[in-house]
Image (cartoon, rainbow, N blue to C red):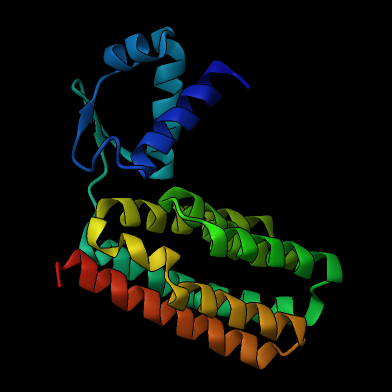
Length: 210
């Protein structure tokens, strides 16, 4: 891994865990000192983060951790509703025994997780595995960014943290997995849409402080 990749991964993880909060301003010199590297890999990592939409360039000043707005939450789930039900439908048609077994392991990891980030990562990988079954790298990359946005929201909104480890969340994934196991495309699509609607409603209410 290059220094740029290392700095990028560390910064991105700090942003997702909200160790660097939305609206915080960061500076190349400070980051270079913190990570013990020159400014060059820091500058390149920040350029990549800006391209991915995690930071905003402040000309001649620094970089702003991109703020999160209510419309961002709505946009994230509007897009996920367009692509994930179709991914689940396709997966129900084509998933192999090995792929079903992999999804089962991810669900087991999720159901036994007690730490927030462990549960978030297991849930993240479950959703991304559906995209992997479709075989589309472009869709997988798009969904990865959207799912990571949701991961950050769980860290940003402490009063919704318990949702990801709740029985409701696990049961929703288990029902989707059941539809895939039974090769029932219509049910897989409907359950995925229902799950996304439920999570979107919860996050919108959480973001609004309700």
